[in-house]
Image (cartoon, rainbow, N blue to C red; front, top):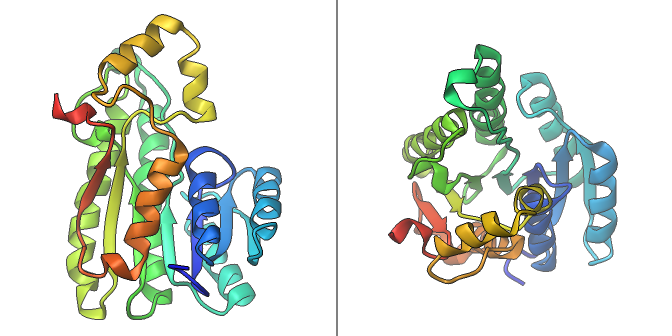
Length: 247
């Protein structure tokens, strides 16, 4: 197993990409703290992880709160004794046309999607030992434009910049910092937006591999970056999009 006896924190992990990441880490022998604002969902994910034979912990956490993020790390260390891998997956993407976007809309998305990376990384800096991993889930919206997602695109582009800068600062301790940028991934949230067959057809037309991704596609990239096989990779944004951004 690639991650035997490692301990990971995964945020936004009660469903979708986050849950897929937690499960993939567990299959590689990793113990996982599952964090989300949906505590009931976290407990359900923990049950699935424990069925794979690993220890897991559910923690309710608002990642935009410094107090709650600090408590997440404290509870994880109390339960497992250490933290080796931090996966920043929690994020929101409310569609709002720019003309209608209010300051509160902007602040909410930047707090959850970008400020959280600062808060989580700040705690990770204190908790991780040499060889630790910080992996954030960005988006192809950080590289190309999408209407009604100006705030989301800005938050993810900021994440990419934070990843590169932090990688330099933590390199002396052999801690790697990377990001994964998904394209169109079939998750519960995305499925609701793709109920219109025409919209789904238009999405597929943008993807050279002619399929939407699934959470496992992102999870596999995270497992690789978390493993020793990626020990010489840092400060990078790995695009996993079926070729969308090639057009």
